[in-house]
Image 1 (cartoon, one colour):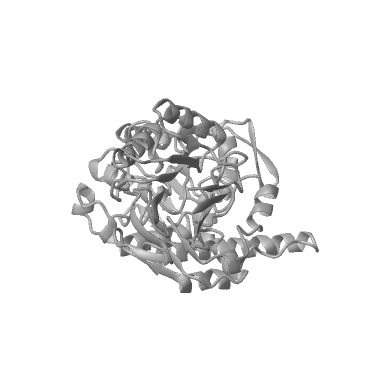
Image 2: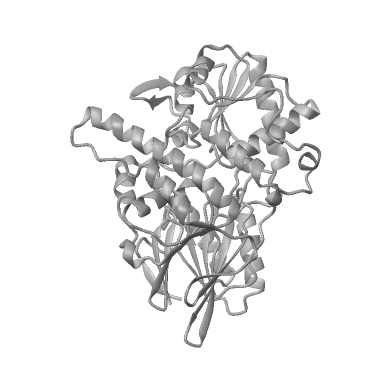
Length: 460
């Protein structure tokens, strides 16, 4: 029994880990690499292994850095099953169709400039083929992945449908439990339920995105959001919120809905300027079974994301019209790291306006435009042009859907409490500084921990 760490090893994106048992190989996730464009391009076109050597794939959740290379895998000939929760299956169909559309449009643009431009990583047809291979499984229901590997999903509390994966692996008379954390969420997030730590493990593959820091309280973040909106509206400005279409957009819209009902923010238009976010929100409405029904708004309002001031814009003409429409207003648009999508147009038209507020509500990876905005560079480059950054920049870490250091420790402590024979913790999905800091904390607690490098293969 062995593990090969392929993606999200000493970095955040490109989640992919291979499990080798009884001569079979199972992939945990197959995500897109994001960040420095040339490097990401090369990594995304390198298969984790030949498709005829891959027997099954178990997906943790539908974020593109975890599922985004599935159509490429299928385009190269993969035809075996892809396991997921039901909500992840439905979200993945939406996310991959959008990703394929972007791949095709980017390839068309580059082909007009360079005759020898690469074809798209994958197409809309490849994305549609992924859906035919996906099997939805409820939380807590075990299923056989390959001979000797039995899997169970438990709620990771990160986004709708997200899961930690329990793999009970057997070779001969030897059975070991491997746990893949996926992305761990936070207790008390809106809409979705809290994380459920797996009941024990021999080996843990664990994310570590925020292993070196703690988030602000969510109640404080909501109060800060209300202040930012009120102040920006008072000067007639626009609040631009780059937000991932999946998860973060719904969290922010949910809180805006609650704050409007409570009279905590002024009544100004809210534009969700993302066709993808609109489609994702529809999937959220389709899966009430995985919502947190202890929350007042969930109990009181059947349509959480539909209210009079919220407007969903699909048409590009509607989106462009927002740039000439005076504030105050709130615009929520993808992508969350400002690397693509409609948020780029809103930034290009509004980042130089001191009345504007750019509100960052999620993690910004190295080499992304979002990271440069967080660093408050004097100018930012958008569509090949330098744009002065005169807008106010606010960062709300409290809206992160990732567990912070304390929450990661709580999750692992819960697993360790049921694991007298825990052998090893492998930290993945984190920048080196965060991983090293978190590894040092775990080592001081007597935990055997390491941070694997890409392509490292180890027994477990």
